[in-house]
Amino acid sequence: MSIGMSLLALLDEKPTFGLQLRNEFEARTGGVWPLNVGQVYTTLDRLARDGLVELESAPGSEGQRIYEITAGGRQRLKAWFEQPMKQVVPSRDELVLKLIMAEGRRAPAIGDVVQAERRAALELLQEYTRLKRDESDEAELGWLFLLDSLIFQTEARVRWLDACEARFARATPAASRLPSKTTRRTDRSEVTS
Amino acid sequence: MSIGMSLLALLDEKPTFGLQLRNEFEARTGGVWPLNVGQVYTTLDRLARDGLVELESAPGSEGQRIYEITAGGRQRLKAWFEQPMKQVVPSRDELVLKLIMAEGRRAPAIGDVVQAERRAALELLQEYTRLKRDESDEAELGWLFLLDSLIFQTEARVRWLDACEARFARATPAASRLPSKTTRRTDRSEVTS
DNA sequence: ACAGCCATGTAACTTGTTACATGATTTT
DNA sequence: AAAATCATGTAACAAGTTACATGGCTGT
Figure 1 (tube, chains in turn brown, blue, purple, orange):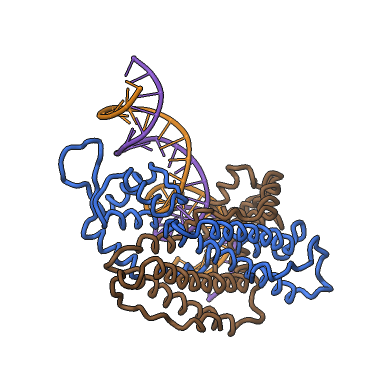
Figure 2: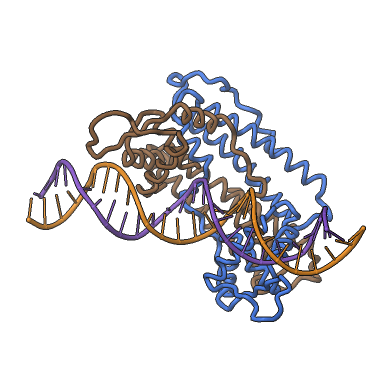
């Protein structure tokens, strides 16, 4: 419930209404984490259902329906902040599944899959790095957090792809391997730079 | 639809029935990616609905209902393997949201959140490393891929947390910062090792 | 006959997500 | 008056996930 917890965090600062929450949310992420307004309302409903927020008993509906966080909500929020994310131990990462399933096929041999993913990841990395270089000042802090996260994750992905390829090569002696379109290893310095 | 694509990949190797698919799936991930049998059937239904698999016209139901991949299914699978994962640009990472929302609060100050997450990540890292050291031979290749993925991702997370803290410190000059329970930076060598 | 496994299935729920409908107020 | 914007809401779907029900077959 990451969206829910985020809305809760915003409501903890100050009670507001749905659209305002969306605006705040998008402002904090520097506008790069679009959030459909509808989702704010559905999430708000679910939070209300769970007793984490409630409609301000307060007065005249000028259209706006102001929600406020409850005691239970504050408690949940506290727990969210204090307890570290539990790493989902089966990482549930789609790319991991893809490589596992690609292992031992021809058609797209695992090496080809790795190379395609690797190329894409490096392109993304370049784009992110450019973004970071260009607007690294005066930008929203949240957006910078997000951008850094993308960079670190993508770097990790590239390293992981390399490791998988190496591991696969080790597990499957060259002799018994099928020829692949791209066996060549790309220069590692692209990442380390 | 990562589960769906995985089942499709297995069916592309050889038509089978539900429970067999689950067993294969768990075998490939070294038994560490548990998959509720029920989920296999629901996913199979959804794949059938989308015309990616179909019941083998074949004969006597000995209880087993054998599915096979369709031409459309093969096409989708090919695309899955060939097209690199599109990086969800708003990374939709819950931890990113957490830090963004923690920024500018007291209660749990952002520094405390970072430290808690960092500590947890380092513990995980240790555990993963131990796992890797212990059973790095004769283990299922898929499980090793998965384990490596966890390691690289967790390392990236630690680096990212450091970067966030540094960025936050830079953005918020020391004078204007609220005192936090833990301002001390932990030794970086824990990761690099 | 009963325990236990093999095998299938379904109902239900969660979070995320979109597309659309509605009404009120403000601007042109 | 028409157009735009503010604001709320709903119906519907996707994908993941669990808990439970059912029936058949096998071994004791």
